[in-house]
Length: 116
Image (cartoon, rainbow, N blue to C red):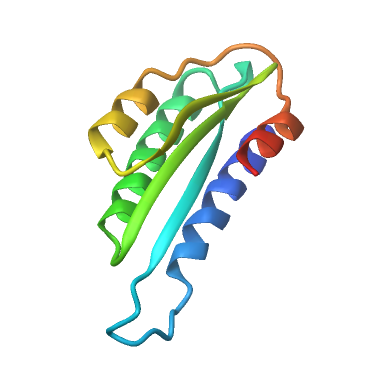
């Protein structure tokens, strides 16, 4: 269930980027996206590796989109943690994501509060 919720959150964020935008060529788009990632103990092993791959692809996609784009990363397990403030540095985001480790319980409420 926890994996389902985590993947659902990631999918929701991804779909929000795919929504059609009716913008003129002169309109400059600015996006600030916070990626909230479940790193609780139940994500250990293959689920965490899948999350990392998806999160890196997501960041790459957001940062390559038209306009000015920034991504922040919040992780949560027993406690939430701000891993990165808003940045457009894909290398930094990739390193942060690759260094995530699974531990503890699932405090999704705090994760969402930190991400808001």
